Length: 121
Image (cartoon, rainbow, N blue to C red):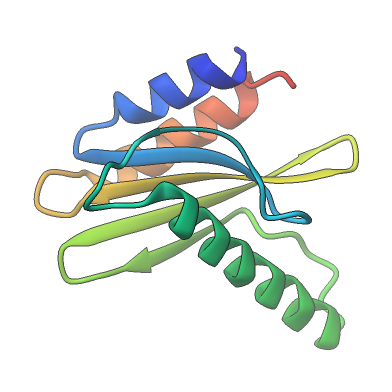
């Protein structure tokens, strides 16, 4: 599955607002879909890059030799899922924003895991 297909698959998740594939070393988005004037995916991607970097630094400071699978940020009306992808030294994450009233969180996490395993870069 390529990036465009992966993002379309993520947006097929019930309640999806927007999705992006982001390089968290540079903070640059490799692709995005959805969002709009009410939800700026570029700003969200950049902000979530800082979330990933902070967690990686914390794990290093604690000398925890484990990797991040995903991060969930729960808002009053939204879920923000960040799935960290490790691909041959590339540091990427798949980001999915969901409308909390319409989303099934377990199914969304399952879908991102499936996309992760099918994505080829």
